[in-house]
Image (cartoon, rainbow, N blue to C red; front, side, top):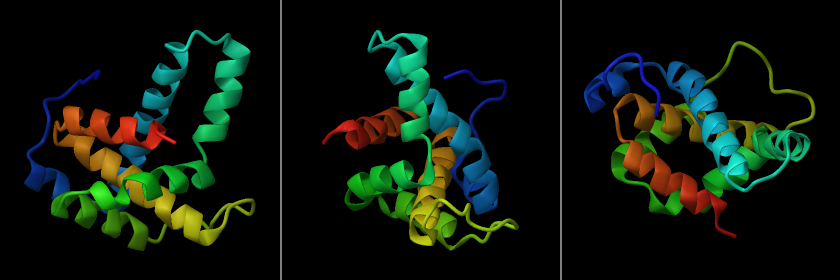
Length: 132
């Protein structure tokens, strides 16, 4: 993935707050989704529609449910920190609080893996979320 800075150690990534990890994880997740859609050969309108359907709290919560049982202890810890984080804004009115918490768990996990340079594991987990 595109990087301006070298990866952090796992310990450095763990020292970041869960919402900091979710902040970067949100963007990395969207990049993974858009990259996947681009390689499917869809036109831009369909890619945009499909990206919106997959980059929202409900879809991210379902993706997290698919991989939750496959997480290592450090990954589970990062995700749990994200689930327990309380953003300063409320849950969007069209989202369920439980979905929003699971989506934040996913974004925190993605941010942790990306920032600590675990891109092979990040890709592996992303592929698992694609399986039906």
